[in-house]
View (cartoon, rainbow, N blue to C red):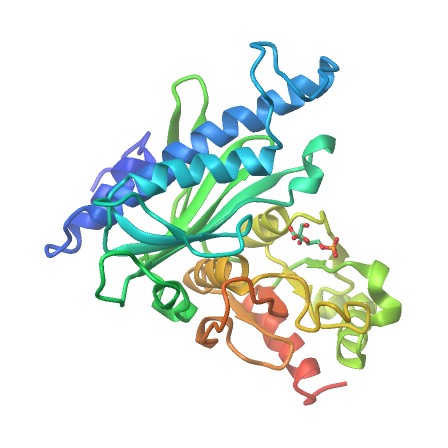
Length: 339
Ligand code: P6P
């Protein structure tokens, strides 16, 4: 069959839907609403840079409108589209404490948990940031959705992905049939297939960890990081350190080029005993993407991220995620088989 060119993300999603005769098109509709939100946020993220350059007060833009903080803007943008799309019954956002209802009469059969703008502390230095999303099928039977619909383990996700706002805007998602990446052509406002059927390299050249915390690491983390830094050309060591401080950017680089990202528990975060990253809208969606791309995602005590039963919307979880062979090796250090 001839290789098609210029496949848009909406066409790819529709083609995936056609694989399921029983599909109603609601998931397709939901993903398309998230795509529209991503386009709007992408435009604003770029304008934000412009506002800074023009020395705007940061309070009003050139149209005299209130300039919201970008993460607030991203949150509002996604909420507004989701609450009236008719495809979801409830949502959760990194920006809001409780569950977020949809408009009365617009309840659908899915749920969305999202980090509207992960890494937003980096936006004013033009470092890549991103939106992360996780979709589940509702399990409650009432009108409005409940927390129960959101607190499902990651292996039950029906879709997951992210939109990274960087040198270009790229959307990466999976619905369980592999991982596909699309690049936004802002001149036409379309995402075009740029990374078909992404597979994360089995062995990596990069490790991503915040070495500022070295003095607070437990032995397993220290032993593993010391190991990957030892010189051993036969095993491709030392790995190179790449740490952007923006999870979506570090994850995306590792997904494309191979790599392992670690944010394990440490002695520093007494207020965050489970580490810093969130399960529902950071670790679980990225874990679905990485497993669909042939990689792994575990905690620092060897649990599979996708098997964890969430107990609260914003619960944190230690995260070790990336190339399979690297996570396999890290697992040996973290579960005591190797030191
Ligand atoms: P640290 C950004 O604030 C974030 O939530 C993730 O995007 C990123 O991976 C992590 O925190 C960085 O945390 O402690 O290394 O600054």
